[in-house]
Structure formats: structure tokens, C-alpha cells
Image (cartoon, rainbow, N blue to C red; front, side, top):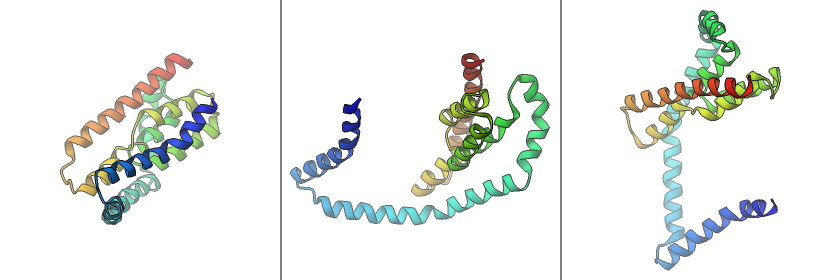
Length: 176
């Protein structure tokens, strides 16, 4: 396995060297092109800040207002009948909103229940089977100026929904 480590160390520098050599051979001003790209990246970073702030405020309000706990208390009987641990619902709700928040919840679930528990395995599988849909839409669509994102939002949330339930089914079949 030492060769994997060697490849992982050298792959990025080799790709960068290849790009620079190819650009130089094609007579592309590589340094100037890099600087222009960096300027564009900085401008884009500043343009998406309002979208990120809005998303983070919405997540914080949702969690701190008690809305999440209220929602979980409403659906707890249905979850328990279906064999779905209610502890996993906050992760399923936060994952489309915030990768960092979801990672924190996954870490808490694993610390509380253990990495080899059903909930620990389910949280880990769910973390890898879903995406931060709102974050992706906010950052990437906001960066390129797309305002109408309704269809992309629907598809992303459907994919997250399927990822959550596929995680529950697969972890139940494999580990129960």
C-alpha cells in the first residue's frame, strides 16, 4: 500500500505541472491566466456571501426556535411504528441544509450511541448518501446568477429523501 501513498502525494503536483507545461507549449500566458482566474474567484466569493449568510441564519432560527424538536415530537409515534429511530430525524432534516451541521450531528450521534450501533451506522450511511442541497443551490446557483432554481431544488430534495430512506433500508437489512 506504500504505492497508494506515493501516488496520493504526487498526483496534484503532477497535474499542476502537466497543465503548466501544456499551457506553455500552446503559448498560453499561464501566469496571467492564473491571476485572472484568481481575481474572478475572489469576486465570486464576495458575491455569494449574502446567500451563505441567509442560509446560515435560516438554519440557526430553525434549530434554536424549537421547531425541529416540535416536528420530531409530532412524528415520533409514526417513526417508532416504522422502526426508525427518532434520534436520526434531525440529521435527515439538517443534512440538505448544512454539511457542517450534519457532520456535527453525526459526530454527536456516534459519540452518544457508538460507531457500531445501529444509529451510528445509519448516521454514517446517511451522511454519505445525501447531499447539502440548499448549500449547493445557494452557492453554485448564486455564484453564476441563476435565480430560478425550483426544479433543481425539487430534484435535489427528492434525491435526499431517497438517500435517507435507502440508508434506513440498507442499514436495517445489513446490520439488523
